[in-house]
Length: 485
Ligand code: GLN
Image (spheres, rainbow, N blue to C red):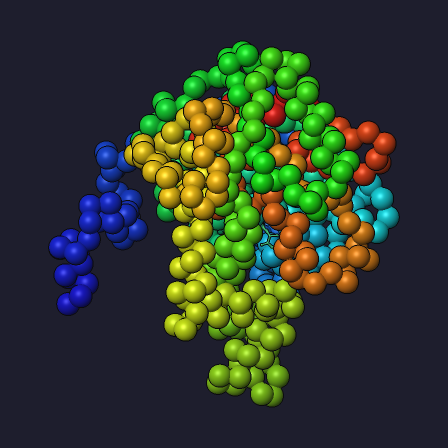
């Protein structure tokens, strides 16, 4: 009876009715309301591609560096891999990572840690460390990674390459094993910005919607966002770059601070106007992220129970309820278990108000901070007039919230150079979370961000500078990033 009730459509809103029809029919009617994505434009020349192991590939296992998925062949291929194959990609292999994307040094892996080729015993960053190293070594021209809170940008910075996290919802996540859905993005790593820019924008990739991914922006919204953005970078003299004051923290390595200053001078030499800006909620962003991401992860990872998914632990005790505990206890690594516990706690009835709900509010403040400093409106929202009087009282930032508004924000990708793997081993998990302090805010706001290698004098190790843009301003962001190379 419930089926008939639904079928009559009385409780389904129009878009759900459409989706329902698509799922239930044999696809024998053409849905005129659903525009067709334009055909992909072939890339100039074929290229090699490494794929992070949480992205499904036909013919290769997809294991997320987890014991629990050690016997998992994916029955289908992720949309992004199909899209890149159609543009000339040949997949050279799956890359090592932190289990399910949880980590910053690619050490939380069933395959053991990824090593940075630049020096012995050095972190390659995480969680897309394997993808970064594949590009760095020239094993692949481009690599696919995922970035939930910095997992493309951090390894790019630590290995001296370029890592790009697109606007949330631009590239399809269908076939990407979810970590924290409201933050997860798929992006690219390469030695230079240009191949990424050309792949995304010259081959029509940014224009393709994927009906299999409910968070993939619809074609009409893409169109609207596109129209709200300036078409090209124009000349540098009309560009303003903001330097967020809150990112100049005491823990910032002095050499990285210096390379930040060098980049500012180089931009100014090219005619760019550089101004200080304030993003007051930055300080709370990291805490909010580490409440929200584990909460979503704890829900996503519930399906790995040995029944629906995952290698079942067949021990003598593994029956009934203990099947779950045995399977999950043996299948997940330490960090993943920690996140599941953290997430389950913050979603529990006694903690949800103080943790999860508060973190959602902080997330909104972080988004508001960015919208306030960018010249362009966020095309997803109606323009909002911010009443800043209440904030001025608490932050004392009245005079920093003047009329100057910026096109991009420039800051370091990470506060330090890549640490030694032996140091990472002795770090507490909270120390490790600190590495993400500069990458997490853009993730919470769903904004595009790119890390490019920075120029450091007298230091052999690599570091990165991060450029952040307004939502859907990806094309100009990458063009601007080329000016930092
Ligand atoms: N280091 C962060 C975390 O562990 C980010 C991971 C990611 O972006 N996948 O959650």
